Length: 274
Image (cartoon, rainbow, N blue to C red; front, side, top):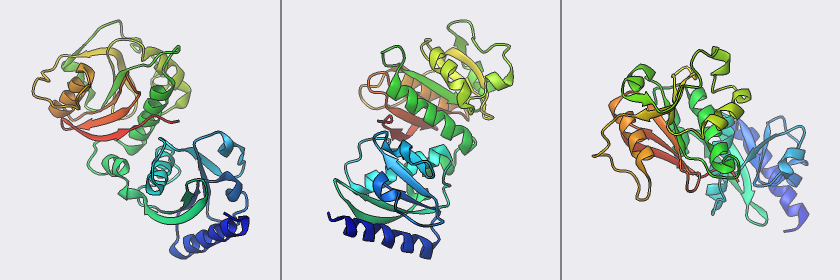
């Protein structure tokens, strides 16, 4: 595509965004983003590291190798939402394409399935859910010590969750200060990733403070249905979300896929960041 056509598409997106009052413009092309002139925040979405060179703009990673233009935009919107850059009530304008930037889309953030699941009917603060999801996606992608890690975060209704579980190992968070147990603080994520290698799951209060790690669910999951190939951790996580007010976020050891369970059912699934 000729450069002047690409620039014209970018300028048209700016005019549209300004006319409809879009919260942000998302562009899957860091070179074009540098030329955009607008007071509306510009988010650069990329599967590589190029977006990091945009000093004055926001940057997000596509959460998976999206197959369609709508998937590209939905993935970028989801990552921006998880970072807290946009809200569920926002409307965004996307400038996307395959090898060439050739499409303008208007997207209602709250229409993304994962965002709708988080924002509607979930009993824990979206801020806590967003941070746990970002941590889970990082862990699903990176693994630990050159191997994939499978674990789960059981969030909310922690008193009831503790009654239905027991420690497999000494609780590494016992007696620690709240600031060191805050899962919404990325400074604590390195230690959380280390403890993710323990057998068992994390129990997290609805306020975002970790109550325990290395916990085993004492719960009947015999009537729980999970996707074929998923193990006992996923079934137990779904079951605890059925029997308590908690929700569960799991990471699959085989592929790093992150899933959310609520009321015994899987409500969302996300591939790890690339």
